[in-house]
Length: 155
View (cartoon, rainbow, N blue to C red):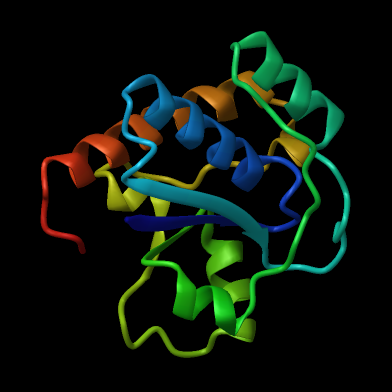
């Protein structure tokens, strides 16, 4: 079973959206027995909070099944327990290095770059562009699942 972790700043918008999009897509493809997926934050600001309401509404709008969420911060145990850790932007890369300074196992990646796209996945908490973020996450996650399913070499 491949264990996937998505990480953003607060774990209330992008990473939790990625988690639920990923889980919905693998369920639809009857692949949930092959994957385990969660999400985390690099910061402690939102610990315990649910999905940010505009992100939750966007996921509902696109028929993504959601559950009650409690934001959590990534830690060294997560690094040990997950196979791949995907970040949303350069700020998250800086933030994760404060918690996990070494990536000797090469588990940590920017999501968009890993799947062959350029640019960060913007934080809709600041931009208000929840639909745009949803669409970019969906494209990235579809590519990620296809890449892993085709046994593409893990970067």
